[in-house]
Image (tube, rainbow, N blue to C red; front, side):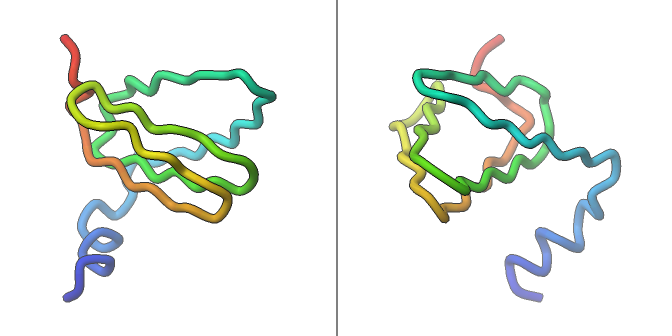
Length: 75
């Protein structure tokens, strides 16, 4: 089983939900839902993921980011 197959097969998306968010700059969102996995896709524009414990990562149109949780890096 490859990594993607394991990702999709393992959690089976129990209790999953989807949010579509559209913002005009400047904007910021803090995700603190303690989800074990978060998938982000930039459809248009640019954004930055700024983890508490590591360097910021820029997302551009067409980029896909997967964040592993549930630790948010703060109490």
